[in-house]
Image (tube, rainbow, N blue to C red; front, side, top):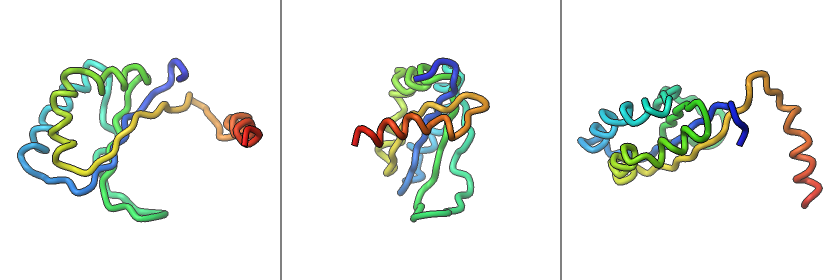
Length: 119
């Protein structure tokens, strides 16, 4: 992963049981993000499907680096509340590295061509 690029924790949530456990998760998550510089940039906003079927909500949390995102996810504070979400929703989650400022799609061409030549 590239140093100095932002990273994102992304979750796709379906079939959320909006009960006291999810409320507690929401009450506690911000305090787990703060030490790692994480903050919400998308939190279940209105979704307009462009392709395929979307039957859930998207959450995206931005971090200053991939290390910070991973350290947050693995932190005891977050691991303590994680079951509040996973046991009360159908969800998938991942962390992904962003691109540097000024990035252009053409920069990906050599990597794509190298992968194509390996096939």
